[in-house]
Length: 388
Image 1 (spheres, rainbow, N blue to C red):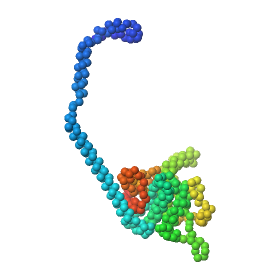
Image 2: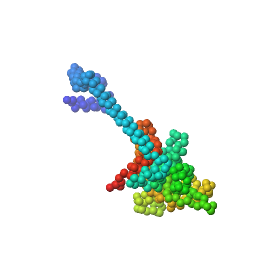
Image 3: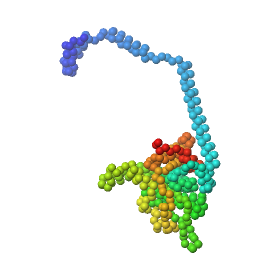
Image 4: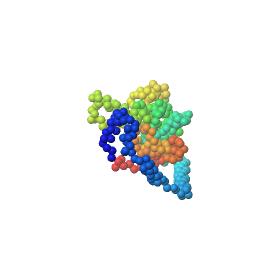
């Protein structure tokens, strides 16, 4: 045991930073309490030996280790080959099935054939929505996008679906509504023939006025008269700005109205928000100049194009706020910013194979009739429980 006197002397020397004792006096003070050199070295060596014996790993037999590693590699190779064969076989089956359907079910630009293909279905969507992408790698990407939209519009109206909404993330179609109307009308002429047999066509987008110029035919008296048509098609154009940005703008508007005393905070509910968003997205704007990107639809502009007036809205089917079916032309389900408020109860169908396009590094899928038809088949067989 260290005496208390020596402890106090040593602590005082430390407190005075070694000024009280010299080095020899300090060594003399601590020497009685130090172990013998031989005993300390012996204890140190025995501890090192015990550590070495404890941590020394057991030597593994090299032959057994080699065999075990080869077995692991063989198992990995077998799993890799089986997975590769499965993916390739599934890709082949999907590709062959897709081509068989493309040959068996082809529209031949005939409304009668399309109507026959959907005649046996138990139900059809009143509001069909499709998700398209602008192919930036192609030079005529806009022309391809418009042609796909026109084909879908023709298939939709031939199937007896009154409303078609087209979602394209950038919203470039909103800047060419009049051009898109002409492209769709030209496509419909390939299916229905003369304009007198074509359905009424109306195109609009949120915050844009409806574009539905009427066509006239000459009668025997030399005056122009409208030709009655039985069917109609409404095309709604949606983009990324109609989703999150619409919710943000509506939130700001309701907040300002509540702060100014025009609306009570207790009146703001889910039903009110649903009604406002539905009114924005499913009803055209009454003012033709509500958006700077909207093409002019005034009477003066229509006269320049040889059109005297717009068709009345009573000829068209009312737009259902939420689509019944959303068809995604792609290898996997990716909404890509689709307005979330519109797809709460929507049946979503993806036309592409989940393995082939992803493995090839391509996330684009061609817009083909068999994919459109498979989407309608899936919707007819779907079971809607609505949370029950």
